[in-house]
Image (cartoon, rainbow, N blue to C red; front, side):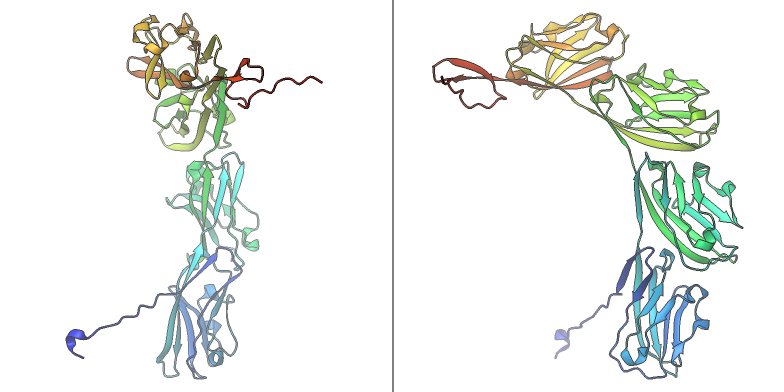
Length: 479
């Protein structure tokens, strides 16, 4: 064959992977061969930590193993005859993930065979909602743990969640956001149950948690990861309720000079509590006179927020953050609010229909109130400079709309629409503006049921709602 026609063929052998759940009793790293192996061959399993298992001179050699693996590994009998060189590893932990290499040597030390197997762990995930009082992050082992073992729970951000050393907890080593919120079981070193209890979890606690046990020479005995996912709670209410509460309770001891701040998804300040009292001047005007927090909130730990006259315009994810005097975050929680859009249904032929909107009293006298229709956009009613502006209305609504007097003082922004027809069905929105800043917003979905005419057997015309079964009415039958 000429050089120009010479073809090279490469065969790439991928490393086989063994994937198991964290906490299984044992795992097998497979290795089978049909190669004839001499009776005096040596078989050695290794990883980055050292020798995992050694078979030589016809028997296991536990004295050559790394101490972490002593009493935890096993190979089959007559392995050199059967060619099954698989390794069973008991009570594997996440920290033992990685590549394992099995090498077969001749008596002279020459490599006869070599294979790699990669061990992977599926990290367990704990999923809860923030209403639970506590959650447990599991970590169990059957490995003998000496009395001087140090147990350390940490998160990916390198914050210490819980530290156990010399037979007791070390709260002074914890990150302050976890103080008073974590707990380990009694006699954990004897039972091997190193699971962590985390009290009042919030979405701010979402992270990958690592439990590591060290001996007195700082060598890792076990290492395990757990993913915590705390769902943001959702509060759902109907439009028109007087108020809604966004819940947040904690048992964490809060300093008297702490600052509590509620904010929405647009980074607008909803409520601020500082220096022992509310700070309404720091609120965004959308929320002024509409929020309330409990008394002695730092003592009771009830940081819940009451929002008055909620509408779909308040549909946000709200975040409550507690700061120390130095500005460090002590605690954080999110709550999602969903206010269902107001639905109004009326039958065509009615004298009028009301699109309701009630909010706080004493809105600014220079506020502008506008009702709009969508699809296409039309101005239904405009109130500005203390009076209605009929010349700004779309012609389809002239002489058909009415709003209450002193609406900015009373907070009743409801709209009365006269002689509604099917054409009026659709989505309406009402907003209150001061200059270019919106202060209130609400959506109302209006459905006007049309009336259809049907002829009965006598020839009379009857009107019925189109939402009723449109089959013709049957004539009365005399008995």
